[in-house]
Amino acid sequence: MTREHNSAARRLAMLLARQLDLDEYEVGTNAGYAARDEANSFLPDVVVIPVRLIRAAGGTMKLETYTDPLPFIAEVWSPSTGSYDVDTKFPEYKQRGDLEIWRIHPYERTATAWRRRADGGYSEATYTGGDVPLESLPGVTVRLESLFQ
Image (cartoon, rainbow, N blue to C red; front, top):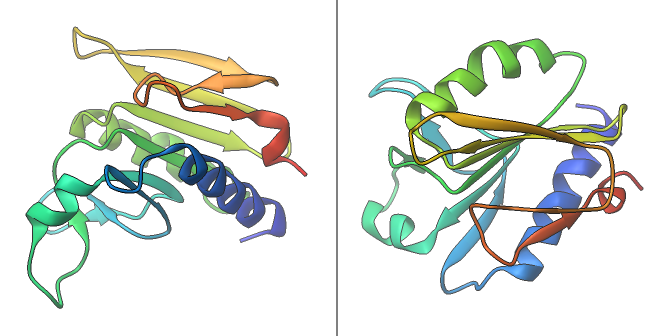
């Protein structure tokens, strides 16, 4: 992946980790698979995983895979995977019921958020700057300009 892609993912993970209670959540970068079905899963660029799910998975020497909906997943756009993320991964994340799904675009300097509504559908909003709240994690915000240094 490009430097811009990797930097945006790392910076997002750090911004989230600074605001979350480590006893409640862990933040992963390219760690923690989101299961599509029993045989297939996706590896998000950034993911927030509730500690209760980590503990419930138990065992050792097992692939870290989560079937329950996750509170936050982000993919960072890259020339090689951008279409795949939008066309393949995002519909599956929605099917899983993940609460908040972001696409960070490091070249356009935008973030698009899909947030699960009470009716099971998703709202969509695109941000070009400022502090963006994570609705799935109350009190957590991301200053977009911080992602694109």
